[in-house]
Image (tube, rainbow, N blue to C red; front, side, top):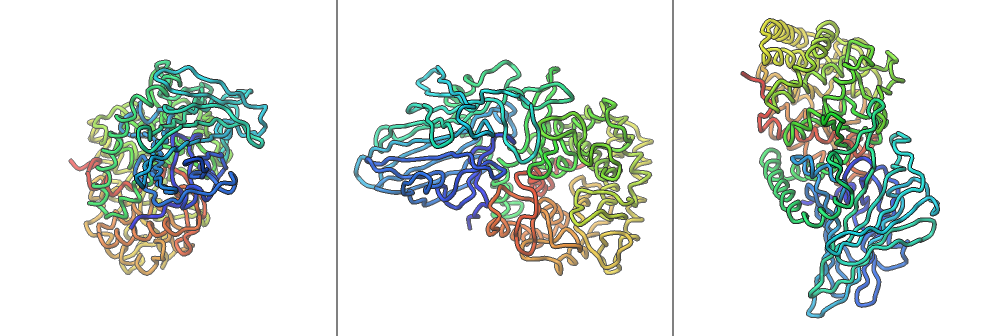
Length: 637
């Protein structure tokens, strides 16, 4: 069965250039940015002189819609098929954000390929017009705040650019907002691009005169040049694609000349992903992963420092807008450990650099580096307010991620460079991690907790991870000390957390409670053997009585759950039936939920309604089953 996506990805490049359809039919509602702002992307087809709408709200254009007969989503493409008046129109949205290729994933260009075919023996004329409004590049809606300019490009490409009169580059930050600087480009290889004013907006429009015989295809390219992408401790940084002085005009020309190469490579990735996911968890698991790929990529931005070092910056979308958040990186990482560990390292490194700079005052790890796209230091919890820090959470995340990246990359350079900081965090966990006091963790949606069993588990595996890092670099004394400490804490954990029936508590002092013990998945992924084999069998069985129609709640305090932790917990179980049950529930949630937004990761396990968050890179956590299957990060000697 094909899943109905809660939202369909159309243009998915980065947090400022991510556009989705939130209805079953492409013409049933306005096209929107990831945060549900209308961006007025419209598609019209004139067939033998009669006008129809295929994209955008049909009621706004006062034209009848074409009949949509199919929509298919794969890792990098969303393909719609329409039929009317003897013509089949195929609209293929394709964004080649291939994670294995830094140049390709960084390119700010996305495609709409349109093909017109006859359904009868008649030759039909099909004039296709695509409109894209100023909402792509300015938040303001007054026409006089926008300028347009025609470009001179090679190979018959027609193109224009549009941007605000005022260019306050990196002049603002925040969560639920669009970009207000840079330039949007529309280009076409078969037709003309021009500007047009409608209502209170300026549009760029491409017009392609097609027929269903000799001239039945046109490709439209949407491109955005943000000039500078992020501010990193006062230094404006450019996107990776700009590192050698490449221009947007060159990117557009290459987009057309390299389309076939990009498409074949992305299709190959998709085929391999489909097979791996279906083998590991079934067809529904494959559908979930395919739908998540472009969202993961579009929630991040690849930038380069002046010294050539890359940083991969995540954004907390519809959360608080925080950038380079450590407990967002933690669930995101499995995807990049699988497909490009260099990017995984580029996600982890910013927190280390922040601490090394001396700007972070605490002995434990920070939560974030700022509000996207301004990274000048932590903003969460009013920056340094102690009651809003997440000391055990973030120290544990950083040490586990460092071990995973080190193993996946195959060298210890990251740990070598920041070993003193990592050692400081290990010391903190050795003192405070075994039984955390009242503090935040990444899942405190029902309030803060003291004596959090799942958080204490994270500390156990963080210490074991640090021990393995020390062993890799030849420090056997530290390795032995921290592995012994991890095992000792694990033994105490089993006693203090036990409910007495084979299941384990939410907190050490609350008998009869439960929580997902997803942090323990690293015992399996790293092949550490910290806990006895079959340790979690009764815990998983205990989850069965708490399971709701759309998944297992995070804990006994509420019915809310998270997509990433559901898959981590199911992977921990090693029970194929429980994994299938979990995937079925998550698939059903996204298939039926009335919350028509890009994949949300926090929702009700009873009603399927979104509680918070959408378009976050944490969906990379759903790939942990493949990471476990591939044994890429095994730390076993």
